[in-house]
Image (tube, rainbow, N blue to C red; front, side, top):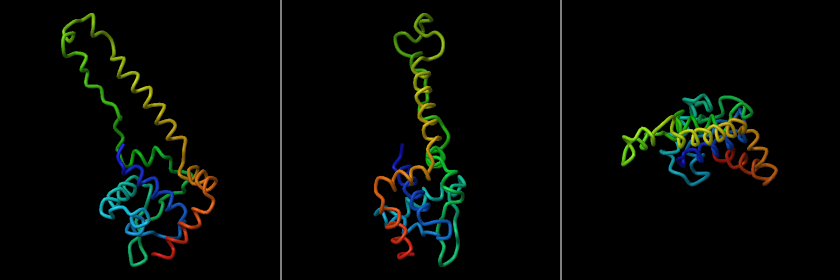
Length: 158
């Protein structure tokens, strides 16, 4: 998984804390974590294309969540950044090498592929069960002052 997923999830948290009334410029999101704005903008644009964030034009423009944080799963964010393709792609390499032509060695579906797909399905189910709002609540319990401090930082730097 790319760094863009981590960046996008953090951006979603900050946009959730900023609230639906405040648009946050990508330059401020990038400055908050000392990230390159041009690359972060690509991640945020992916969130916009996926309907997770929306762009607000104008001098007080920027980005905000396009829907409530309770309706944005971590799987939504991962899919927006990484795409919907499976993480594992079986290339059927078992049909190559010394046993490739041996019908006794290459029978039925690839068991490696099946194991990887089961693991990915479990991973995707877990990501789908977690929302940005739930993650925000977890952060608030673990570090109670962070959401308010982030909200103040963004409102004083827009």
